[in-house]
Length: 355
Image 1: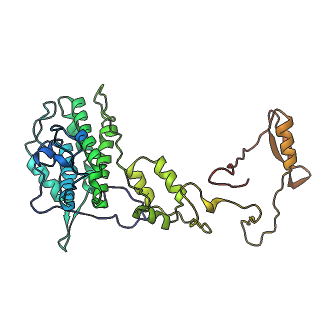
Image 2: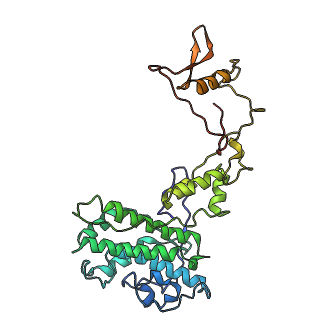
């Protein structure tokens, strides 16, 4: 999964094994019609097929051999998708550039740079070289006789890849392979949406590219979740991050960050409540910034705060007592008063911190 970004201090990126046999190789044909050529329509949900919608989708009832599925996904959704974006696939679409005369050499180069053979003989899949091809891909799109049609076709390829990748048929597939493909799909989606938007293509309507590439990345009790909890993450923070950040690149980067805070024990936390951040006022003791400090806690007259809130049309502000700089006074806000706003989090929220 080296196509995904990692923090500088992160350990080496998880390697993705190349799970194809020697004879499994991309055929250079149209990306979206590969299931027809490979006779795997039964593995593809009808909504993500180009033709032959009447072929039964039997993968849920009679799953294909896992090794065969992994080989197909590697060849089609990784190598084939890269080849498509490098304009090296034969096309039925008349609105795209002519077939690349160097297509075979380009596909051979994809295998050379994206399938790494180690001294041990083991082979691994790498998406790192694709990061250097962003401008080249945009330039190839620019050569299209109809840029908008080309963008829509590429978007349809991404839609098929995303749909197949998030279908139940991928259950059991090597996790690293699944998210290597997803990382490639998200990168190519960004190229279509943003890279092309920065290029002066005139009045072109950009296609839909908001596909869910991070699907199942942060599954409950998954290895990623357990790794993050071991790195100091609270379960409630995991839930918030998963709902807040919609991109795989972002979630992968976050999953490698360390969040250990001295004194914080998240062992009793849940997906909605951080027990470590809850404060029991009966037992909580303030600590000093420097050891040996004997300063006392600032105390505020809560009754006067309630009076200002209940009996005036303004709000309370705290000021230092001009006669005692260690004491705080409560007064109603008057126009022209300067102050610094303080806020607190409600006790009903996941974090209760007194002001």
